[in-house]
Image (cartoon, rainbow, N blue to C red; front, side, top):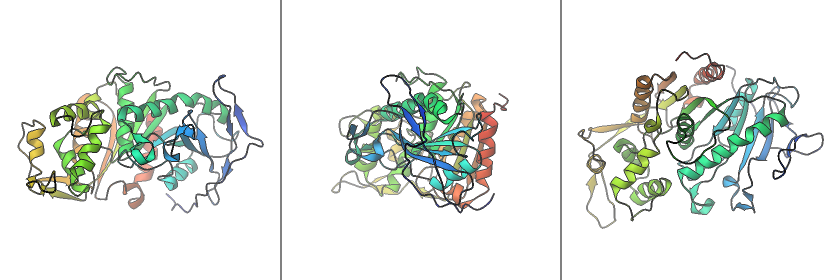
Length: 376
Protein backbone atom coordinates (compact mmCIF):
# COMPACT_ATOMS: atom_id res chain seq x y z
CA UNK A 1 0.00 0.00 0.00
CA UNK A 2 1.48 3.31 -1.05
CA UNK A 3 1.98 6.04 1.49
CA UNK A 4 -0.83 8.55 1.68
CA UNK A 5 0.46 11.83 0.24
CA UNK A 6 -2.87 13.45 -0.55
CA UNK A 7 -3.54 16.96 0.63
CA UNK A 8 -7.22 17.15 1.43
CA UNK A 9 -8.47 20.55 0.34
CA UNK A 10 -12.10 21.31 1.10
CA UNK A 11 -13.03 23.35 -1.96
CA UNK A 12 -16.39 24.99 -2.47
CA UNK A 13 -18.50 23.12 -4.99
CA UNK A 14 -20.51 25.04 -7.56
CA UNK A 15 -23.76 24.19 -9.23
CA UNK A 16 -22.57 24.59 -12.81
CA UNK A 17 -22.65 21.24 -14.56
CA UNK A 18 -23.91 19.58 -11.39
CA UNK A 19 -25.68 16.23 -11.53
CA UNK A 20 -29.12 16.66 -9.99
CA UNK A 21 -31.62 14.29 -8.41
CA UNK A 22 -34.94 16.00 -7.77
CA UNK A 23 -36.18 13.76 -4.94
CA UNK A 24 -39.72 14.21 -3.61
CA UNK A 25 -41.64 17.46 -3.46
CA UNK A 26 -40.56 18.23 0.12
CA UNK A 27 -36.85 17.65 -0.47
CA UNK A 28 -34.55 20.21 -2.14
CA UNK A 29 -32.82 18.81 -5.23
CA UNK A 30 -29.57 17.00 -4.51
CA UNK A 31 -26.83 18.58 -6.59
CA UNK A 32 -23.42 16.98 -7.02
CA UNK A 33 -20.53 18.90 -8.48
CA UNK A 34 -17.42 17.08 -7.28
CA UNK A 35 -14.02 18.75 -7.18
CA UNK A 36 -10.80 16.83 -7.70
CA UNK A 37 -8.64 16.34 -4.63
CA UNK A 38 -5.16 17.63 -5.55
CA UNK A 39 -2.39 15.01 -5.94
CA UNK A 40 -4.84 12.17 -5.27
CA UNK A 41 -5.13 10.37 -8.60
CA UNK A 42 -8.82 10.21 -9.56
CA UNK A 43 -10.36 10.92 -6.15
CA UNK A 44 -13.03 13.64 -6.04
CA UNK A 45 -15.23 15.00 -3.28
CA UNK A 46 -18.29 17.06 -2.47
CA UNK A 47 -18.40 19.01 0.78
CA UNK A 48 -21.32 19.72 3.13
CA UNK A 49 -24.12 17.90 1.33
CA UNK A 50 -27.47 17.83 3.20
CA UNK A 51 -29.18 14.58 4.16
CA UNK A 52 -31.93 16.21 6.22
CA UNK A 53 -33.52 19.51 7.12
CA UNK A 54 -31.51 20.27 10.28
CA UNK A 55 -29.05 22.76 8.86
CA UNK A 56 -27.29 25.69 10.51
CA UNK A 57 -29.93 28.33 11.13
CA UNK A 58 -32.67 25.74 10.61
CA UNK A 59 -32.55 23.68 13.77
CA UNK A 60 -28.78 23.25 14.06
CA UNK A 61 -26.95 25.89 16.09
CA UNK A 62 -23.57 24.36 15.27
CA UNK A 63 -22.20 23.03 11.97
CA UNK A 64 -21.05 19.78 13.58
CA UNK A 65 -24.62 18.76 14.43
CA UNK A 66 -26.18 19.77 11.12
CA UNK A 67 -27.50 16.92 8.97
CA UNK A 68 -24.66 17.14 6.46
CA UNK A 69 -22.05 14.82 5.01
CA UNK A 70 -18.92 14.86 2.87
CA UNK A 71 -18.78 12.57 -0.15
CA UNK A 72 -15.56 10.97 -1.39
CA UNK A 73 -15.66 9.53 -4.90
CA UNK A 74 -13.28 7.28 -6.88
CA UNK A 75 -13.54 9.56 -9.91
CA UNK A 76 -15.94 12.14 -11.26
CA UNK A 77 -19.68 11.61 -11.48
CA UNK A 78 -20.45 9.60 -14.60
CA UNK A 79 -17.05 7.93 -14.52
CA UNK A 80 -17.58 5.80 -11.42
CA UNK A 81 -18.33 2.09 -11.64
CA UNK A 82 -22.04 1.75 -10.94
CA UNK A 83 -21.47 -1.10 -8.51
CA UNK A 84 -18.68 0.66 -6.57
CA UNK A 85 -18.69 -0.46 -2.89
CA UNK A 86 -20.31 2.07 -0.54
CA UNK A 87 -19.04 2.87 2.97
CA UNK A 88 -20.80 5.13 5.50
CA UNK A 89 -18.37 6.56 8.06
CA UNK A 90 -19.54 7.68 11.52
CA UNK A 91 -16.99 9.81 13.38
CA UNK A 92 -15.95 9.42 17.01
CA UNK A 93 -15.56 11.89 19.84
CA UNK A 94 -17.06 10.35 23.00
CA UNK A 95 -20.57 11.10 21.60
CA UNK A 96 -20.11 14.77 22.52
CA UNK A 97 -17.67 16.20 19.96
CA UNK A 98 -15.98 15.50 16.64
CA UNK A 99 -17.08 15.99 13.04
CA UNK A 100 -17.23 14.44 9.59
CA UNK A 101 -13.76 15.85 8.91
CA UNK A 102 -12.20 13.14 11.07
CA UNK A 103 -9.92 10.60 9.37
CA UNK A 104 -10.10 12.49 6.07
CA UNK A 105 -6.81 11.00 4.82
CA UNK A 106 -8.14 7.48 5.34
CA UNK A 107 -11.38 8.31 3.52
CA UNK A 108 -9.48 9.81 0.59
CA UNK A 109 -7.40 6.65 0.34
CA UNK A 110 -10.58 4.58 0.39
CA UNK A 111 -11.87 6.60 -2.57
CA UNK A 112 -8.59 5.95 -4.39
CA UNK A 113 -9.15 2.26 -3.69
CA UNK A 114 -12.51 2.36 -5.45
CA UNK A 115 -14.92 3.00 -2.56
CA UNK A 116 -17.66 5.61 -2.50
CA UNK A 117 -17.52 7.04 1.03
CA UNK A 118 -19.91 9.32 2.90
CA UNK A 119 -18.70 10.81 6.19
CA UNK A 120 -21.62 12.19 8.18
CA UNK A 121 -22.25 14.62 11.00
CA UNK A 122 -24.87 13.77 13.59
CA UNK A 123 -26.40 15.29 16.69
CA UNK A 124 -24.06 15.39 19.71
CA UNK A 125 -24.54 15.13 23.47
CA UNK A 126 -23.06 18.55 24.15
CA UNK A 127 -25.01 21.61 25.22
CA UNK A 128 -22.53 23.91 23.45
CA UNK A 129 -22.93 22.02 20.18
CA UNK A 130 -26.66 21.50 19.99
CA UNK A 131 -27.93 20.04 23.26
CA UNK A 132 -27.87 17.03 25.59
CA UNK A 133 -28.90 14.47 22.99
CA UNK A 134 -29.24 10.71 23.37
CA UNK A 135 -28.15 7.53 21.62
CA UNK A 136 -31.67 7.31 20.18
CA UNK A 137 -31.34 10.70 18.50
CA UNK A 138 -27.92 9.82 17.10
CA UNK A 139 -29.26 6.58 15.65
CA UNK A 140 -32.18 8.50 14.15
CA UNK A 141 -29.66 10.69 12.30
CA UNK A 142 -27.84 7.64 10.97
CA UNK A 143 -31.17 6.23 9.83
CA UNK A 144 -32.02 9.50 8.08
CA UNK A 145 -28.67 9.37 6.29
CA UNK A 146 -29.33 5.79 5.19
CA UNK A 147 -32.80 6.78 3.94
CA UNK A 148 -31.11 9.51 1.87
CA UNK A 149 -28.84 7.04 0.05
CA UNK A 150 -31.23 6.20 -2.84
CA UNK A 151 -31.26 9.93 -3.72
CA UNK A 152 -27.48 10.02 -3.53
CA UNK A 153 -27.17 6.89 -5.68
CA UNK A 154 -29.30 8.36 -8.46
CA UNK A 155 -27.49 11.71 -8.38
CA UNK A 156 -24.08 10.00 -8.45
CA UNK A 157 -25.02 7.46 -11.12
CA UNK A 158 -24.29 4.45 -8.93
CA UNK A 159 -26.22 1.69 -7.21
CA UNK A 160 -26.31 1.25 -3.43
CA UNK A 161 -28.16 -2.02 -2.87
CA UNK A 162 -26.50 -2.43 0.54
CA UNK A 163 -23.83 -0.68 2.54
CA UNK A 164 -20.89 -1.10 4.84
CA UNK A 165 -21.10 1.15 7.89
CA UNK A 166 -18.38 1.83 10.42
CA UNK A 167 -16.62 4.34 12.56
CA UNK A 168 -14.06 5.09 15.20
CA UNK A 169 -14.59 5.01 18.97
CA UNK A 170 -18.11 6.37 19.65
CA UNK A 171 -18.78 6.11 15.92
CA UNK A 172 -17.84 2.44 16.05
CA UNK A 173 -20.30 1.89 18.90
CA UNK A 174 -23.11 3.67 17.03
CA UNK A 175 -22.32 1.75 13.83
CA UNK A 176 -22.50 -1.59 15.65
CA UNK A 177 -25.70 -0.55 17.41
CA UNK A 178 -27.35 0.56 14.16
CA UNK A 179 -26.25 -2.51 12.20
CA UNK A 180 -27.29 -4.97 14.89
CA UNK A 181 -30.64 -3.24 15.44
CA UNK A 182 -31.28 -3.80 11.74
CA UNK A 183 -31.17 -7.54 12.38
CA UNK A 184 -33.96 -7.09 14.94
CA UNK A 185 -35.63 -3.68 14.39
CA UNK A 186 -37.79 -4.03 17.48
CA UNK A 187 -34.77 -4.45 19.78
CA UNK A 188 -34.46 -0.75 20.61
CA UNK A 189 -38.04 0.15 19.77
CA UNK A 190 -36.99 3.32 17.94
CA UNK A 191 -38.88 2.78 14.71
CA UNK A 192 -35.74 3.03 12.58
CA UNK A 193 -36.47 2.37 8.91
CA UNK A 194 -33.20 0.71 7.81
CA UNK A 195 -34.15 1.56 4.21
CA UNK A 196 -30.86 0.18 2.84
CA UNK A 197 -29.59 -3.10 4.35
CA UNK A 198 -26.21 -3.28 6.07
CA UNK A 199 -23.90 -5.85 4.49
CA UNK A 200 -21.19 -5.48 7.14
CA UNK A 201 -20.12 -3.23 9.99
CA UNK A 202 -16.68 -1.98 11.02
CA UNK A 203 -15.65 -0.80 14.49
CA UNK A 204 -12.34 0.94 15.18
CA UNK A 205 -12.00 0.77 18.98
CA UNK A 206 -15.76 1.16 19.44
CA UNK A 207 -17.23 0.04 22.78
CA UNK A 208 -19.29 -3.12 22.49
CA UNK A 209 -20.46 -3.28 26.12
CA UNK A 210 -21.00 0.15 27.66
CA UNK A 211 -22.70 -1.33 30.74
CA UNK A 212 -19.65 -3.30 31.88
CA UNK A 213 -17.59 -2.26 34.92
CA UNK A 214 -14.48 -2.40 32.73
CA UNK A 215 -15.92 0.25 30.45
CA UNK A 216 -16.90 2.40 33.43
CA UNK A 217 -13.39 2.16 34.86
CA UNK A 218 -11.63 2.83 31.55
CA UNK A 219 -13.72 5.91 30.86
CA UNK A 220 -13.49 7.25 34.39
CA UNK A 221 -9.71 6.85 34.38
CA UNK A 222 -9.50 8.58 31.00
CA UNK A 223 -11.58 11.44 32.47
CA UNK A 224 -9.18 11.61 35.44
CA UNK A 225 -11.82 10.59 37.96
CA UNK A 226 -14.45 13.09 36.82
CA UNK A 227 -17.54 11.12 37.82
CA UNK A 228 -20.04 13.76 36.74
CA UNK A 229 -18.27 14.28 33.43
CA UNK A 230 -18.18 10.57 32.58
CA UNK A 231 -21.02 8.83 34.40
CA UNK A 232 -23.21 11.91 33.95
CA UNK A 233 -22.62 11.79 30.19
CA UNK A 234 -23.62 8.12 30.05
CA UNK A 235 -26.79 8.81 32.05
CA UNK A 236 -27.94 11.42 29.55
CA UNK A 237 -26.96 9.36 26.50
CA UNK A 238 -29.04 6.44 27.72
CA UNK A 239 -32.08 8.66 28.23
CA UNK A 240 -31.77 9.35 31.96
CA UNK A 241 -30.68 12.20 34.22
CA UNK A 242 -27.53 12.42 36.30
CA UNK A 243 -28.32 12.60 40.01
CA UNK A 244 -31.92 11.48 39.44
CA UNK A 245 -31.47 7.82 38.48
CA UNK A 246 -29.85 5.12 40.60
CA UNK A 247 -26.82 3.31 39.23
CA UNK A 248 -28.67 0.05 38.56
CA UNK A 249 -31.27 1.83 36.42
CA UNK A 250 -28.55 3.53 34.41
CA UNK A 251 -26.69 0.25 33.90
CA UNK A 252 -29.87 -1.39 32.61
CA UNK A 253 -30.33 1.45 30.12
CA UNK A 254 -26.70 1.22 29.04
CA UNK A 255 -27.03 -2.54 28.58
CA UNK A 256 -29.95 -1.92 26.23
CA UNK A 257 -27.70 0.35 24.16
CA UNK A 258 -24.76 -2.04 24.16
CA UNK A 259 -24.18 -3.75 20.79
CA UNK A 260 -23.36 -7.04 22.51
CA UNK A 261 -26.93 -7.14 23.88
CA UNK A 262 -28.38 -6.97 20.35
CA UNK A 263 -26.03 -9.54 18.85
CA UNK A 264 -27.65 -12.61 17.29
CA UNK A 265 -27.18 -14.94 14.33
CA UNK A 266 -28.94 -12.52 11.95
CA UNK A 267 -26.44 -9.71 12.53
CA UNK A 268 -24.20 -8.69 9.63
CA UNK A 269 -20.52 -9.69 9.36
CA UNK A 270 -18.36 -7.58 11.62
CA UNK A 271 -14.84 -6.18 11.24
CA UNK A 272 -13.21 -5.45 14.60
CA UNK A 273 -10.04 -3.43 15.18
CA UNK A 274 -8.95 -2.74 18.74
CA UNK A 275 -5.86 -1.45 20.54
CA UNK A 276 -4.06 -2.58 23.68
CA UNK A 277 -1.46 -0.31 25.24
CA UNK A 278 -1.55 -0.90 28.98
CA UNK A 279 -3.75 -1.35 32.02
CA UNK A 280 -5.19 0.44 34.99
CA UNK A 281 -5.22 -1.06 38.49
CA UNK A 282 -8.68 -1.47 39.95
CA UNK A 283 -7.54 -0.52 43.45
CA UNK A 284 -6.98 2.99 42.10
CA UNK A 285 -9.32 5.46 43.81
CA UNK A 286 -11.62 8.29 42.78
CA UNK A 287 -13.86 10.77 44.55
CA UNK A 288 -17.48 11.35 43.68
CA UNK A 289 -17.30 14.73 45.40
CA UNK A 290 -14.24 16.80 46.21
CA UNK A 291 -14.90 16.48 49.92
CA UNK A 292 -15.94 12.83 49.66
CA UNK A 293 -14.06 9.75 50.77
CA UNK A 294 -11.92 8.08 48.07
CA UNK A 295 -13.39 4.88 46.64
CA UNK A 296 -11.62 2.16 44.67
CA UNK A 297 -12.62 1.36 41.12
CA UNK A 298 -13.67 -2.08 42.35
CA UNK A 299 -16.96 -0.60 43.62
CA UNK A 300 -18.25 -0.59 40.03
CA UNK A 301 -18.43 -4.38 39.99
CA UNK A 302 -20.63 -4.34 43.09
CA UNK A 303 -22.81 -1.48 41.82
CA UNK A 304 -23.30 -3.27 38.49
CA UNK A 305 -24.40 -6.43 40.29
CA UNK A 306 -21.52 -8.46 38.90
CA UNK A 307 -21.19 -11.99 40.23
CA UNK A 308 -17.54 -12.08 39.24
CA UNK A 309 -14.87 -10.66 41.56
CA UNK A 310 -13.15 -7.54 40.22
CA UNK A 311 -9.90 -8.20 38.34
CA UNK A 312 -6.69 -6.68 39.63
CA UNK A 313 -6.43 -4.56 36.51
CA UNK A 314 -8.32 -3.57 33.36
CA UNK A 315 -6.58 -3.67 29.99
CA UNK A 316 -6.88 -0.45 28.01
CA UNK A 317 -5.91 1.24 24.75
CA UNK A 318 -5.68 4.53 26.59
CA UNK A 319 -9.42 5.20 26.53
CA UNK A 320 -11.44 2.02 25.95
CA UNK A 321 -11.11 -1.26 27.85
CA UNK A 322 -9.77 -4.18 25.78
CA UNK A 323 -12.60 -6.18 27.38
CA UNK A 324 -14.75 -4.76 24.58
CA UNK A 325 -12.69 -6.71 22.01
CA UNK A 326 -12.92 -9.97 23.95
CA UNK A 327 -16.63 -9.58 24.64
CA UNK A 328 -17.47 -8.78 21.02
CA UNK A 329 -15.37 -11.51 19.38
CA UNK A 330 -16.63 -14.12 21.85
CA UNK A 331 -20.19 -13.03 21.15
CA UNK A 332 -19.71 -13.16 17.38
CA UNK A 333 -18.24 -16.65 17.66
CA UNK A 334 -21.11 -17.87 19.82
CA UNK A 335 -23.73 -16.37 17.49
CA UNK A 336 -22.05 -17.79 14.39
CA UNK A 337 -21.67 -14.35 12.78
CA UNK A 338 -18.73 -14.06 10.32
CA UNK A 339 -16.08 -11.64 11.50
CA UNK A 340 -12.51 -10.45 11.02
CA UNK A 341 -10.67 -9.15 14.07
CA UNK A 342 -7.33 -7.69 15.09
CA UNK A 343 -5.98 -6.60 18.46
CA UNK A 344 -2.93 -4.39 17.98
CA UNK A 345 -0.50 -2.75 20.46
CA UNK A 346 -1.37 0.80 19.45
CA UNK A 347 -3.32 3.63 21.12
CA UNK A 348 -7.01 4.33 20.73
CA UNK A 349 -8.02 4.80 17.07
CA UNK A 350 -4.40 5.11 15.92
CA UNK A 351 -3.99 1.61 14.49
CA UNK A 352 -4.90 2.38 10.88
CA UNK A 353 -2.33 5.17 10.76
CA UNK A 354 0.38 3.57 12.94
CA UNK A 355 0.20 0.15 11.26
CA UNK A 356 -0.37 0.74 7.51
CA UNK A 357 -0.93 -2.93 6.68
CA UNK A 358 -4.21 -2.82 8.61
CA UNK A 359 -5.70 -0.62 5.88
CA UNK A 360 -5.48 -3.21 3.07
CA UNK A 361 -6.84 -5.75 5.57
CA UNK A 362 -9.84 -3.47 6.19
CA UNK A 363 -10.49 -2.84 2.48
CA UNK A 364 -10.24 -6.54 1.64
CA UNK A 365 -12.79 -7.49 4.27
CA UNK A 366 -15.17 -4.67 3.36
CA UNK A 367 -15.15 -5.80 -0.27
CA UNK A 368 -15.60 -9.44 0.68
CA UNK A 369 -18.60 -8.86 2.88
CA UNK A 370 -20.19 -6.30 0.55
CA UNK A 371 -20.02 -8.89 -2.23
CA UNK A 372 -21.65 -11.46 0.03
CA UNK A 373 -18.74 -13.92 0.01
CA UNK A 374 -19.13 -14.70 3.68
CA UNK A 375 -20.12 -18.21 4.64
CA UNK A 376 -22.53 -18.30 7.54
